[in-house]
Image 1 (spheres, one colour):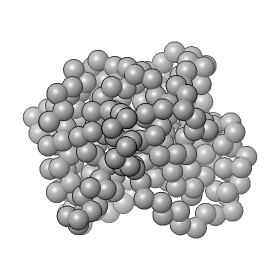
Image 2 (cartoon, one colour; image 1 turned 90 degrees about the horizontal axis):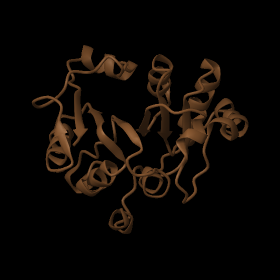
Image 3 (tube, one colour; image 1 turned 60 degrees about the vertical axis):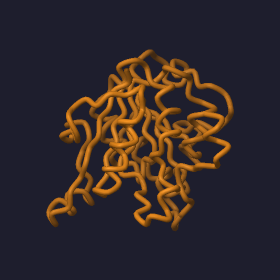
Length: 225
């Protein structure tokens, strides 16, 4: 993990966009309740959530709709989201509050640093990375989140039998991702090739639109050996 940090890989490029008044108010009022401040200190998940339960990490929550939908339909599991962009964090907090969810928390910080400094080894039952930035131009590929050092580091945080689920709507990135996952000795594919979309991952409005236009979506689900 230290080598990964030295390479200055980041899980994002900061494009804050315009934050609405409601999103800003949600961060001010709700982050102290549902957010976790970044600190180089391992989390005690039982203390964070007030119970023992399976723990799922989501890296890159976007505007939060999918994250909240999954947490709402799986109340027996706890979810920790990582998202750096303010508008997305604000919207996610608003949705958590509206749906009265007790099994979802958010950290507004870079995922690589959170993974290194806050997530205990062998503490996760699963990890979701849905539609990461594909950085489609060849000269941008070094910016992609899904790289062998990052996946190797993520695997150390997974329990034996835990899963990594990645979804992308870029075929070339899907090919890149499956190659990275296949090269990780700590992982095995749960199917031969790409996986069917599991029921727990809801379709986004953008995904529905893309499917209507004939665009593909590729799900990859690997398990920690």
